[in-house]
Length: 264
Image 1 (cartoon, rainbow, N blue to C red):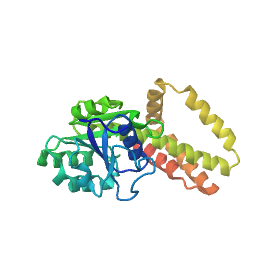
Image 2 (spheres, helix red, strand yellow):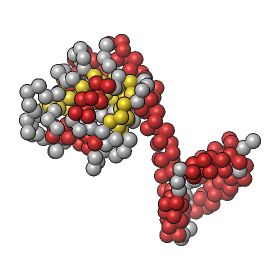
Image 3 (cartoon, rainbow, N blue to C red):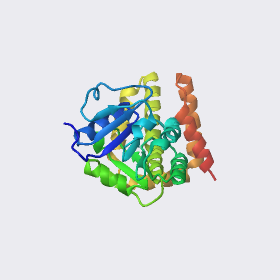
Image 4 (cartoon, rainbow, N blue to C red):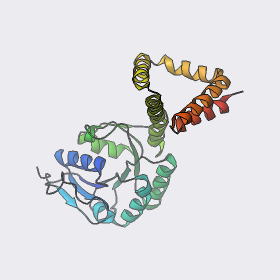
């Protein structure tokens, strides 16, 4: 389907897994998409698609777009914005979807302020594959116009009342918990495999996760602080065991350090 006259024009910078899926859904929703990625070129799913224009740089992609979605990487976020600024027309919104620190999001917003370009901080709160444009998103900063446009194209986006960086803060706080838990589980199962106990530990972890509820958070926090000294020593022993099993005790040793910091 080719975009109708007056269809929104959206630039997508970064055509990797997430960016290409978002671009495909935007096209399916009737938007015209201008894409650029210095590394991957034109993804197979977008090649020849009606309404899609592959450009040769950030400025060319941003030219004529009412919204620019930066979905490349946190290391490229600032450079991409700087490269696009000369071509950004009045009223165009820059939306940064990269997983970046709140400080970088604020830096982007400040750069936008100096050039009269509204900047929206968008945090994607789940993997894009399987969800595409419907991936749950949080938006902060100059987010109202971005949310209105993307919702009209089928996106799931919640606007937070706060500056750029607030959405990133929520995402990364969740990451500390979730990715930390995931890394600890992987490390524990690696050690259990080395000890010949992987099946037992796998079942035990599953049972613990299944019975956890909201009250478990308060219980875990209180118990950790109350028993920090004993648990710190326990995690030192656990780290020593992992080393004996030939598994680097990265998460176990980090746990020991946290307990020692909390100890009175």
